[in-house]
Image (tube, rainbow, N blue to C red; front, side, top):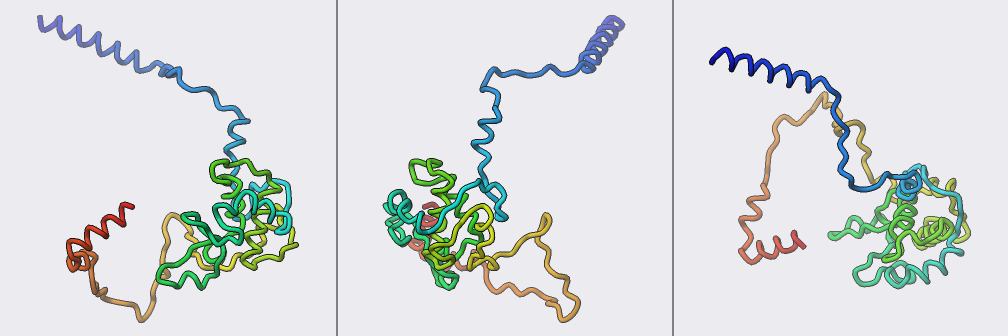
Length: 220
């Protein structure tokens, strides 16, 4: 009986080995359709800080103003001041030192190409990607001129737009590599780290009502 079981196990073993040597079958879930180059091209519309991805076309603040008034002002105001819950565009880096800093195009954004990318990709609200490249160049130029970054008659295109230097361009730290590494200290270095407070302690000093309000703001 034992010998019969032994032979049976050997047969099963060799069958498993033989099956394992075969190439795995291609799985098919019969779901979805092949992605064509045309579909990929519609999604591949990102624009980099150096202007990579910008299409042909051009516009100025003068040509962009009537387009902005017609398609953007209802939400963002005629002069980029913002309306209701929709943000404004106008500001300077000085706005960032306030207790509640205003991070808008003029005060915070580091690259003008980011503005073009966002407008082309997501605007107008409810009708995204309906603007032509010329219209987007014009609207971008208009918003930049509202912030006194470019002149009203300055032409924005795939060459000139990446050259626009935003006021807060140098307000960012560029990470190099997987992590950001501090410069090695060679002299007069801090030996001991003194922790002066902890978040848990500040929370402990809050009343139950304040904590409930704080949690509500966090989940808003």
